[in-house]
Amino acid sequence: MGADWIPLDISSGLTKELPEDVKYRWGICGTGRCCHDFVQALKGLPNAVLACVSSRSREKAAEFAALHGIPESFGSFREMADQGDFDIMYVGTLHPFHREHAQAALEAGKHVLVEKPFVTSLDDALALTELAEKKGLFIAEGLWTRYFPAVEQALHMIRSGFLGEVKQVEADCCIDAAAVGDTSVLFNKELGGGAHFFFSIYTLGYATAVFGTEPEKILATGHVSDGIDFSNVVVLLYADGKTGIAISGMQVESTEETRILGSKGRITIRSPAHCPTSTAFCGKP
Image 1: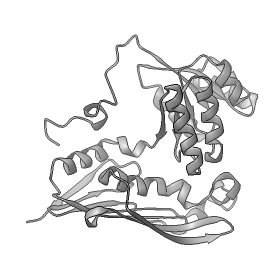
Image 2: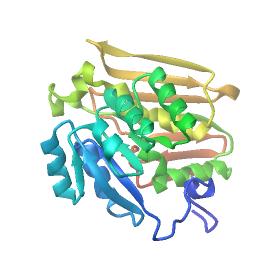
Image 3: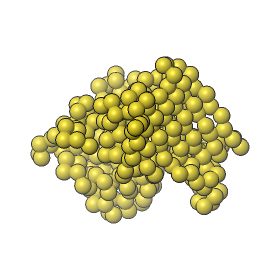
Image 4: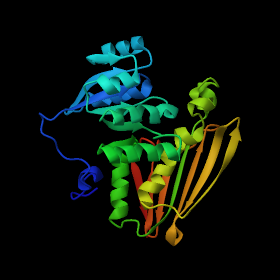
């Protein structure tokens, strides 16, 4: 990696070392698996304090609070936003409800971290980002993949010239959803089911991270039934002949690797690419 390598969040100024006495109080919106996993991670951060949790069910909120040692619980997301004593809300509910819950937090003067996917429409995304900017608050999508050391190392190598001029990014993320059963939220249109909302965020995220600009053209196709996309392929065409290819699906399991191809070689971000621990670099002889 090299002795001069600095994590991108630090080198870009996004992350600064905090004194031990500076604490950020978190309000947790939701009590599902994502919220459980996120809270477990927060427990390892010295500057994070678990302040409160909310659910549509007061009983579930109380159970979650007891499990994780959270001092306050609420039976309404809006109630927590308005009355909870916290600095930043983590929104871990199902994505069709992200705008409602994130907007409540912003209106109450709270910063927001929204679980991926951020929202389910461009209008919702613009509404939240414009509101956050107007109120001087932080809002971001919780796409953890971007911050894995393996991914940061790959981006560092790209920006340091190891690959020469990068021309193509290929990413796949497909699962065999039959194993989880057809009652899963993956198959529920009203709850934001489908491969695009659940898996394309990872594949498209690699292309945007590597190229860092808006594509000039987007081509997309897929297999859709009853409003649910079971597979999709998205091609992002950038200036100077650069291409991103993103494949997502719920019919078969893929290798889930990401390949970044340049004039001097290639990097493979090894499976599982949505939470990778290793990369492989192959340079031209």
